[in-house]
Length: 212
Figure 1: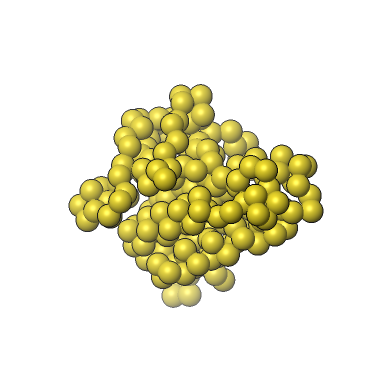
Figure 2: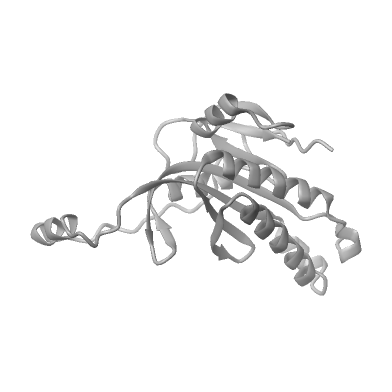
């Protein structure tokens, strides 16, 4: 089956609450010493895949006894898909998953494998009247790794890109779309969604959707 979801202009807008934290005052001398420290982590290029179950609250309300098994099946699918492409899951927040890969195409293949496996799962057999649908986002950029977690502008932006999608979608940025067009992945296409604005992200962003 083809997993293609259409994005409307109203759905693409991010609904995340703005970050209103103020910047702390930093002593200039202290900043210089940190910047020149050999122990300071260095930002490196990574590809990130963020996922989130759409409507999980409703599923819990309707199927409180079956959702633990459904989530276990969801988690197993994501873990297999990520590991099969050499990635790793570095954080889970509720039913949301954050994974990292060495290359953009590794992340794309993991997202494709995961969506196909989720689509093929027999959710009624698990006890759900409706299947779990998972939104996904892919973005590449520089990030600093500390104690197995990551920080950087790319993490903020991919979280907003994820919120712009809906269940069954995989949204991605232009740089990853370029990699797909150069290399090609069998059975996978691209839909150009055009330039969109994401909340708290300056300017417009050229967004694509995987057609699986």
